[in-house]
Each structure stands twice: as structure tokens, then as C-alpha cells.
Amino acid sequence: MKDTTNTMFLKVKCADCGNSQTVFDRTNIKISCSVCGATLAIPKGGKAIIKGEVLGRLDTDLEQK
Ligand SMILES: [Zn+2]
Image 1 (tube, helix red, strand yellow):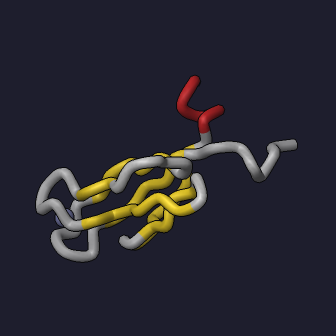
Image 2 (spheres, protein in one colour):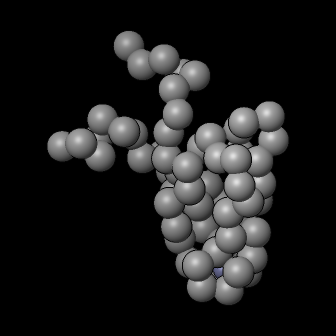
């Protein structure tokens, strides 16, 4: 079973330009869209608050395959 407290990667779509980008769930820095610079995630208490649209989750397990 997966621990839900595990860090994960999220696929986030920018609300401004539609660019989709992978965002780390536990970030200490603000994450900006690589295309238009809009804020996609801001850090709060060690966990990111996603400002864009979350398209899905990228499991770290899947990343390793
Ligand atoms: Zn954008």
C-alpha cells in the first residue's frame, strides 16, 4: 500500500496558457509556468498549493519503470 503522505508529482495545467507541467507536491519554492510565468504552485507548510488545474498524478513508482 502506498503511504498517502509520500511526496508525489502532479501534472498541472496552467490556467493562463494551457501549458501542462510536472509539479512536485512538496516544494519550498514557488513554481511558475515555464511558458508564461504564471504561478502554478506556492509552498505552504512544506506542501504545495496548486494554483492551476491538476490533470493527474505521476506516481514515483511509475516514473521508475
Ligand atoms: Zn502558462
